[in-house]
Figure 1 (cartoon, rainbow, N blue to C red):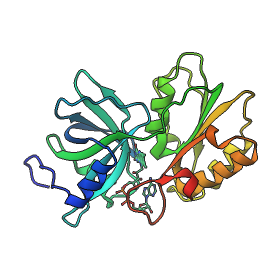
Figure 2: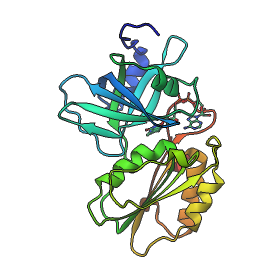
Figure 3: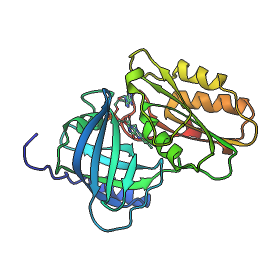
Length: 260
Ligand SMILES: Cc1cc2nc3c(=O)[nH]c(=O)nc-3n(C[C@H](O)[C@H](O)[C@H](O)COP(=O)(O)OP(=O)(O)OC[C@H]3O[C@@H](n4cnc5c(N)ncnc54)[C@H](O)[C@@H]3O)c2cc1C
């Protein structure tokens, strides 16, 4: 990379048009700093340029337009882990699942002053009202969304999270004292589709009495199976919220829960 701040390449007109048609607001993000939270999770702090209103909810994400390595830009979704309105600064926590895909590579290489275009905030995976208890399930890509939502819940709200990560070093703490989190460890292995560990852990988890909401996020085939199992255990469709964050062979983007 050059030593001068990198200006964002302009995205293709049809990509811009498609994102705007979805009602998403275009933002310019300027890289401030980075730090490694764990061996495989890197936090980037970025400022949100401009003065337009920016009011993300915990769990929402941005569609970032990142260099694709071939002179163009690719769309990648990343959760807004936290927002400090007084500085207009956000934190985004990137899982370094590879060293040569656009999202992970950008997280490793970005330096202060670099700029990217992003659209949003977007996403319906936010705390929904009207639940007696909430259960959050996902892999490491979902830690920012799950922690953000846990932190937004009022004191005393019943909530539990089941999170799969590579190993014990990847466990983080949310800013919610006493949060109930069960970590599922892969023994250092890379994340894979249809995670039997996570599927079985959720299947064995007793669902509390009352009407609950379950958030299943992460790899698409894993959450598709989890949704199926939850429906079989008697939950209604409107008690299950989810989004496919990644899957083998897919490049960027996201999957709607009911579609796969
Ligand atoms: C709403 C939403 C919010 C998200 N928030 C975050 C977030 O806060 N932090 C975060 O790190 N990710 C997050 N993700 C997931 C992230 O967008 C994907 O992992 C994305 O594919 C990463 O881009 P990439 O360029 O590194 O890989 P891509 O070029 O998109 O993917 C190439 C290949 O890499 C593999 N792959 C992709 N992601 C993973 C993974 N995590 N583990 C193992 N293999 C993978 C797949 O085989 C894929 O085909 C989110 C996704 C969505 C939809």
